[in-house]
Amino acid sequence: MENTSSVETIGQDTPCFRCGYNLRGLAMNGCCPECGTAVEVSRAGRHLAASDPRWRWRLRLGAGLHAGGLIGFLLILLDLFFYSHTPRIATIRCYELMVIAVSLGATGAWLTTSSEPGGPYFDDARWLRLIVRGLAALSWSAMVGYATLEVADWIKPRLRGQMVLWETTMGFTAFVGSLLVTGLAIWHFSRLAKRLDAGRLVFYGRLSAFSSAIMLVIMVGLVYLIRYLLVTPQWVGPLFYAILFLWPAVYQLMWCDRVGVICRRRS
Image (tube, rainbow, N blue to C red; front, side, top):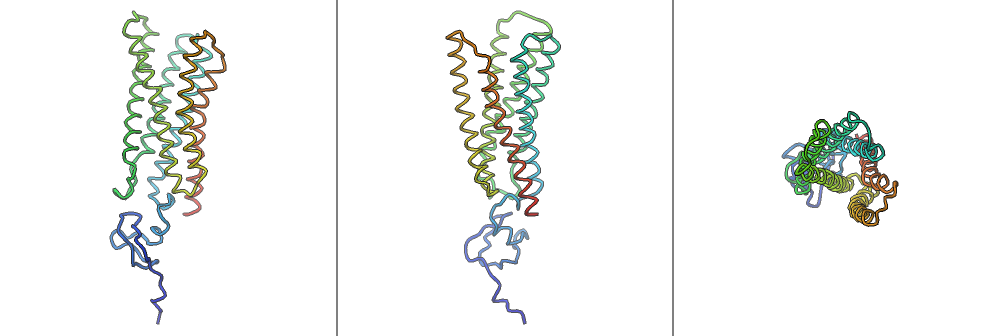
């Protein structure tokens, strides 16, 4: 007869990975009595490789779209920076592409902050997800309004008046909102990186989020300083734009790659 006494059991409180049921006292080779999830999966902890594959796919797709939007937005900004006196059609096309880039970023942020299947046991940062989604919607709306006003003014110039105020407000909201979305989304990624056993990704994510905020403050200060001194070094704008947008995009692509490697390894 088989010796069942040798079967190892869980001797401490361990929530089920799917439903949160306490698995204490169950055999290691057993299943959760509530949802049927293997005990071994829950024993491994909340490793991302053990989560719902469809949710992981949404995370990777969202991170890729967000990174693509950041790179596209950076290229468009640099194009406008160096070729500010382009023909009307070319300038209008830049604003149209800018809306597309921001739309990609907002869609990516929305996907990466989707709730994890499994109920409230997993939703330990719901406030962060809601803030990212709200800012993504706000920055996207502001960018659409800003681009619409700019294109309308290029097509049919009109009295500036309040339009300048609206354009400035919407442009500022779109730009700062996009940066806030990027910083908070990367903070979200750094939290998920803990579930990948990726200490470097956690560190790089926190560093990227903090450095983006610091660089934004420095950039605003330099803009006012340059205007006050009436000096405009050509390299200042591209350098800060590259730091603000390129490094976060690279981090998200690194995160996507690590998720793919871990999932293939544990599948």
